[in-house]
Length: 363
Image (cartoon, helix red, strand yellow):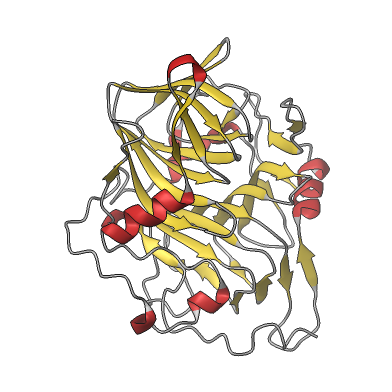
């Protein structure tokens, strides 16, 4: 029985989401030409999530990721140099950079925006390979606080605080929408919608348009693209096409997602739901009685799932299913969707592989 997990969790609003189109760009002193929209920052784990923008003509050189990082390019495009390899990262390219990896350079020939989830600080190297500056969760927290931006709550207890308990002032400046604002961005990750060919990608990265959709007849109108499964942490990164209804469930581990197309009907939200550019964070312990599409357009979003989902048939009913990294891996294996082991020493990730010509797979 599961009635005792969070019986008092009765939210009255969009406690875990933010419309990134309403946020300002904040220039980073660590890297001229690079700006962020802060979404979440954890003082406990050091993890932070941002939308980042690299201005046209900017090259950011010599980065070392002290924690892992995943990202998806939303608009523009950039060139990536790592060791002897150079790649072109076009919109829809998803990437995973493991902890302690060094990137030689990121060059944007046009303004480029991407969603980045950082599992630890980033070090910027200067002369002779020495660290010249760091970007940490505390930097993101400070940047948000200085501008009156309220970041997404990190815990269930924070989500349950009334709005008046928030101590930071409200942002009074102009909104600065994303380049994808007002448009469906589903074509970024859906080959059928985009009609484009594959990007040139580095082994850290994959063109999500070329990753097959996995469809399960037992869960109608739902499709998944499995991008990464970590055998060490249990973290799974996905693209989700959610045109059906997800039944009652608990997030036993946290999750985050960015809506790319369609509109999602969300707990206590407005009848019209939330659309492209809205980013959500579900803290560990959050519960949904139902989540569904509320428009005619395909509902497509990115997702990082940091722990299992537990499904039931309503509060207090027996558990009917648990979905963890093992089930996502088994789904990919069962239909021949290839996941390859990361060659970075000591990293336990299985990463999407997308040769040309693959079509949708079915369970």
